[in-house]
Length: 500
Image 1 (cartoon, rainbow, N blue to C red):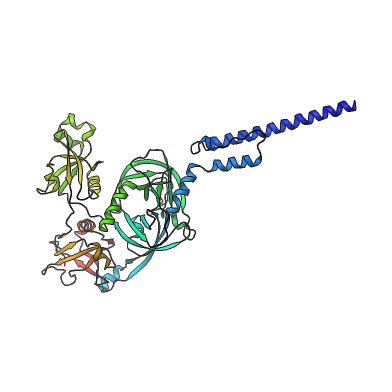
Image 2 (image 1 turned 45 degrees about the vertical axis):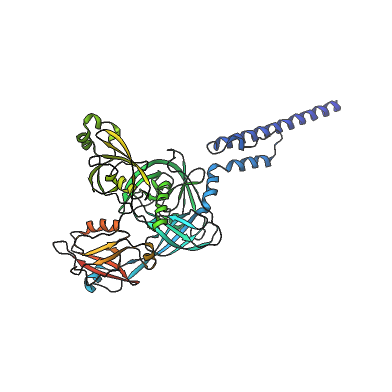
């Protein structure tokens, strides 16, 4: 009896041990399956190891650890070393209304210094960095910190105010980590998008950037912000905040698809509506900057209007105008006889639909796309004449930069890169002053105009915009540089809009 009881007890223990082992394996199996389904969007099933009977706790830990290494994590590891923190010290001319009234024209401008923080992206191993222009605008000192903790002083190679892009360069003998370019023309609405940057300056001192995740919410968003027209932006719900400007928007492969630039918010912070400049547009701007130091637009010799439904009906007839193909584009309103567009056969009344393969929605997009078209290349144009679609190629030349604003008595030009190297300020060059100009006593040939009131003058394009807006004001303040010294004068104008 005793011997029988001992045998039974041994069998019971053996069955219980097998049950526990089976239960352990079952638990391990379901844990792994759970981890798989939690990461099914970002992990291939073949990446998860199979836990066999008798699998250990180490096997479970290894499986869970491997499931954490998602495509998102891999994308961050690829892209984040190429995203930098930017600290820019800039100065602004400062005069109180009392000082302006009491002192009049101050020979030396008093300035206040501000510190801006933002982000940038390393695009070459030699140290070229792409960022937003508004991050480094009028900066006198720029410091760049990369993810490994190293810091460099950066110089501005060039920028484009209207595109809000700037190209920096740091000097280093060692190769820097560079980001891989993506194709911003090949985006899917709903695909993953990661914003990497330096929001609120949080990464200063740590170097490591902040990462937020969302999706591509939309493409082809256009808007005007702070005198800049942004066209064809990428919209994302990845959290983008002040300080993210100039940072990277990357896809799930860690490739750069946009430069984070604008947020739409009622609070000043992220509300899930951020916008990035597409990389394919950024490449066109970079090519212009490398070649000229800024964007030199081609000479088009054309005035256009956005095509409205009413306009299309008058030009093409109601039935034809209802076709969606005529609902967008720009109407050729005026055309200079010897312009390259006229020589290519485009006439007044034609509707331009695309340039260089880029669709044109309205007049703003025509200007934004047109100014970035390459020079001395045959550019395809698609247009419509009397309901018939036509195509032509146009070779564009550089726009001559001399400009004579009405009432100023000045001839202005865009200085070349060599001239700008001699100047502390970037602006527009006075190439001639008329003897009978009311400004002849204060302004001279060779002066650089860089600011009017509180608006920075980066180019003739900006000057033209500002000149139209200040018409009708009694007094303005103009800031200029002469022989390395900054000066300012107060300018008034009479009823005939002649400045004095």
